[in-house]
Image (cartoon, rainbow, N blue to C red; front, side, top):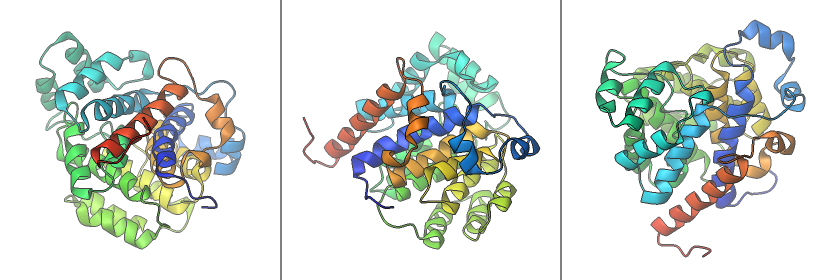
Amino acid sequence: MSTEPTLEDRFVGCLLGLAVGDALGAHFEGQPVAFMERKYRSARQLIHSPPPGELWYTDDTQMAIGVAETLVRCGEVDFDVLCERFAANFLPQRGYGRGARIVLEAMGAGHDHKYLAENLFPGGSFGNGAAMRVAPVGVMFRDDPSAVWKQAHTSALPTHVHPLGIEGAQVLALAVALASQGEELNRESYFETLAERCGAPEYSGALRRAARLDTVRDLGLFGNGIEATASVVTAIAAFGLTPDSYGETIGNAILLGGDTDTIAAMAGAISGAYLGVGAIPSDLLAKLEDRKQGKSYIEQLARDLYGAYEAARGLPTKD
């Protein structure tokens, strides 16, 4: 990193990094690897020649906004407030999955959404929906890994009760928290710290393999699907390969095809927390939608989240 970002820059970089990765990745969601390889020779080409027009984010960013709003209001993940924010922000056109739509519609109507979260899928969902939105927890509780783990667990519960879905969110939140520390990345230590926290071998084993990854060609071995086990480590591994380049991190994630928006959102959140908002290519940031809860709103929300973090630590705020 050439210029050391401030901690506030890292908060803003995390949330906007998530949104930009999500919005750029959304253009290619569901595409096979072969299609991506034919269209772009490299991550750099993708970043320098993105699709024309505005970049519109998906449910990944919309739900991360709800998490951040809850943290700003409550200072922690309050289950009831989080559900209220998810329901209030719900826009079906953002591309929510079928299960999430059913649960969120029940929240908005005052029905038993907890029953649905537990029973729509046997044992609950182990998709990446809890992980895709959890990044604000990582920066808010960056000083306390145990709090990150606990708060990420609570943030998952409105929609995800399966242990693998919950742990995926916990791992991603901790990856963000560690990235925000301002220390030069030691890949071996970074991945081992994450792996040691995991209870599920699906994550701990993959994280230890990711620490040894040395080529983009092998990034796809960690998966590109909607399951948390096939995407969370992939996003972290993408960051670990190119920690000093936000563009290459999300570009490599997108070139994997599959669940491109969510994997790039998760990778972008980690990279933004590490490098700060200044590392996000300005032309991509300029293309990000800016209506209602768009770019300007997300930036201010990130600054408010930083203010809440300072207040929680007993530090003086700018106000």
